[in-house]
Length: 308
Image (tube, rainbow, N blue to C red; front, side, top):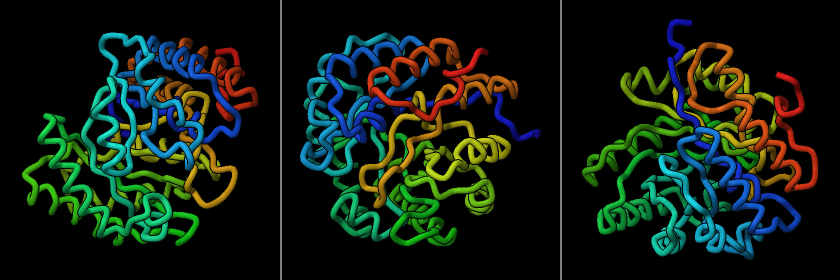
């Protein structure tokens, strides 16, 4: 257990991951109220909206209004997600925090379904993103590899395929004179298992011993928290999660894709293991109950329904 981190950083993605997948209409005022409540829990960053087509993702039709309506709390970053250059240009016009990221995909089929581009075209687009980041003085932080564990079109993605994608990202660093904080492995559709976590992290650490790794985990097949535990034992100290387990991927290729691992459940596990998060667990559980009331149906988070 000696590789357990002393502290982990958790990015809250519930407002984006959750409200983009809901079939019913969520009032803009409720979205803003939820985001503002999350900001009081101690989370350092909240992903609030996606800059995507309202036709493809109706739950994000009011993204601009949400972005403009939030009363910000000092010390919290309020971010949005873009998947193409048009989305990035839209983000530049809105008052959320702009965090430079590079996003590629390990599955060719998922990449085309999700963005309408091939993996090669995606890398070309990332070069354009990096140019825009420089022009607008946006700091480049993490590089994300989506479907790093598999997708519902191609099945499991081989470890060596993930390594090759990261080799290309490392080449992009040199070519564009940037330095990523680390690599995020995204289990976009929840195919991962503790063993696949160990194999991928092991392969990356063997190749790049000092590489910092973050994880974006989904719980579609019920292994999300076990995967987080396996990663913690390997020293991973950066996670995405969603309050109450909100969300899912609208481009996953099947119905019923579960959301990220649940924030309050992850925080509870970390605290019980002696790992600091900086998050007020009771306040996060209250937010989880708020989220369930807003969406109007049960959510998969467990802690919010218990006495603790």
